[in-house]
Length: 114
Length: 114
Image 1 (tube, rainbow over the protein chains, first blue to last red):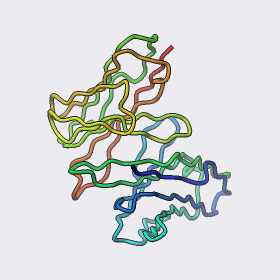
Image 2 (image 1 turned 180 degrees about the vertical axis):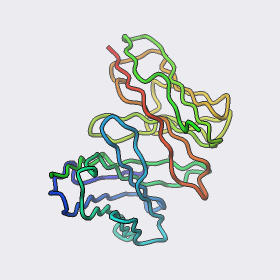
Image 3 (image 1 turned 135 degrees about the horizontal axis):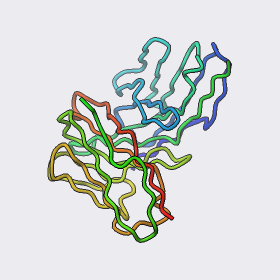
Image 4 (image 1 turned 45 degrees about the vertical axis):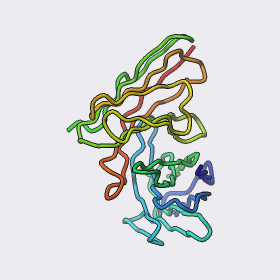
């Protein structure tokens, strides 16, 4: 099955700096890559996603890049703010029949220092 | 529109006891999923359903059973709870997997097995 590795497990940045989180996946059939943000005690919420036919996608301060050849994708957050502090999860999805199963990375605890 | 809800929010069980977690969604979504979240391990898929009356195993199904008798409800059962099942359980749903990709998560159920 799919295996997703995520690095780093913890990341501290100064407010205003950029943060980058990287993930690799193993199954070349994966075609959908979402990123979820989870604040302490809350549910995961989708912040951005990318399909395998696109190399980069941007939404305001957040961007995701995908390298299908190397099987890795990254989350970039620019101009970080204290409210960006949370755990971020990457995921990869292989279509399985009619279902879409997500395999998650182990998460990155991002701390933005004021 | 309540989205995805879970009952109960917290529960403490003794080893060997049984319980059922309820997930309900009012968005008329076809696909529903049960995950468990453990520290440092991200979210892992337990079981999922692609429609009313159907269920399938995910990555970590042992010790759990599920039922989807009604489209809006997805139940997760623990027949004989074990301390290894102490975790936070999240339910999620998705409208379909062709056009829509975002999985909407419930608020979670924190289960402790003593």
